[in-house]
Image (cartoon, rainbow, N blue to C red; front, side, top):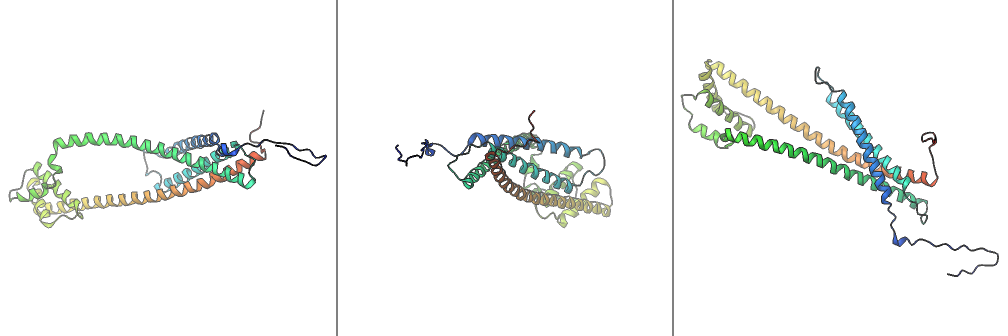
Length: 294
């Protein structure tokens, strides 16, 4: 290519790189950021777990307040997640190759986009690891449950019969059954009540009192009082189970929202840190007081 220039003016010809043949995405820098973010998360979460377990004492006392433990664990996890993503984003911005076909704003946008890719890659990697661990635990629990179910089915096949309770009512008589049969029948009565609202019908209460009096020698009034007490205890245990399930459900909902919010904040932090790393790269910024060369 020939360029005509006025006399006395020097013209320097440069060969520009064809940007259509390459990508602006610097994958080595992104992978380096993902590795750093994952490593920092692993180290800090392990450290936090060790500190948390140090506060648990199973030998005596009531133990730490669960609310305090939950708040502390959530705060630590949030800080670890945000700081690790920001560190990975900063490293990627610092290592990314700068293409000088863009102005400063475009360069900042590209640096921030690399930080978002670090955030996305590290989040997916963490999800894969978490799902793999949950899957392994589920397989182990499933194997144990299958073994227990097989053993139980060999000795208590009638316990899972949905009609067992109704069959019992067909053969009730004035002569109460022996202790072993009475225990099984009482279990089925309570199981049937648990399928509903937990209420034991009056006829079942009366029958249980008769069976208890016949097998224990208690007076009818005392047997009825014992039946009422046991039914009250079963209902209290049922209500505790319902409350525990409600708390677990609410905790899972809050945890899911907090996880989503922390991931969003982490994405913003990775974007900003990558831009900051790119600015330090362009300005050749060094931290002599921190990384002093000897």
